[in-house]
Amino acid sequence: MLLAVWASWSAASLLLLAKPPASADAIRRQLQAFASTTAPRGQAVAFQLRAAGCDCDPGAPASTPPGLRSVDLRQRPAPASLPYALVVFDAGDRLVYAGPTQIEGCGKAIAAATLIPRLLAAGNASPLILPTHCACR
Image (cartoon, helix red, strand yellow):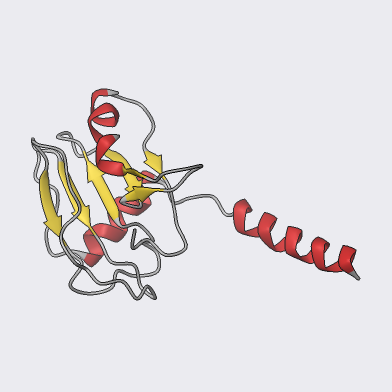
C-alpha cells in the first residue's frame, strides 16, 4: 500500500516537472496581451504581476535595482499562462528573468532583485525562467 502511494506521488511529481517552462517569446506575447504598456526600447524594465489563484496582498512593490523602470501590474490577477511575480527585460527588449520575487532554496530565501544586475550584465545568456505554483513571493 505504501509503495502504491509513493509511486503515485512520484508519478504526479514527475509529470509536473516534465512540463517545460514557457519560452521567452511566449512570455513576451502573453505579457503584451495582458498589459496595456510594453517595455520601452533602450531602458530595462521590471514588470510586477499577481498570479491568478493566489491570495496575496499586493502590498508594497518589490525592490528593483537602480536603473530599471518598474511597472506594477498587480492590481488585477495575471492569466494562468503568466505564473511569474517578476518579469524583467533588458534595454534591448530581451527577456532576462521571469519568476518569483523571492527565490526559495535551502536556508534563507534571496530577493530576485539581487540577481538582476548580474543577469543584465550577462549579455546574450539564456533568460532565467522560474515558474512557481503561487508566484506571490
